[in-house]
Amino acid sequence: MSTDAPRFPFCASEALAEGCHRKLKMTFEGREEECLLIRFGGICYAYINRCVHMPRPLDCEKDLVFDHSGRYLRCSMHGIVYTPETGTSVSTMCEGEKLRPVSIYEENGEIGIADWRVSAISPVLPVDAGPS
Ligand code: FES
Image (cartoon, rainbow, N blue to C red; front, side):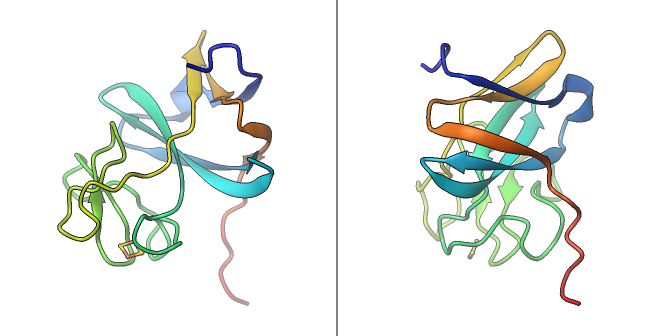
């Protein structure tokens, strides 16, 4: 595990409520990537925000990553559904393929990134203003 990885604090624990998500930008393996932080069953998980089907963010069509049941993550492009705990597709399409996990910590009321592959993060993404 990456317990000794450099830590990049991101937000307070209460800023990520159950069934919600937050996003950040990070330098991951030398490339800029978007990271999705979610809370499910009280636990925080993080994944690179890229669907296994096509290189699209899960929230590319809607600003949602959980499905209507709140039990699964769902790509808004073509609807692949993932288990929040493992990021595994449980849809027929791309069944068993996984979102790429990112190591995080939650300690003393703080959530952050602690992953050797990450060299920098940027705070909360600005709200996407969409095409002008
Ligand atoms: S791009 Fe995500 S389901 Fe197709």
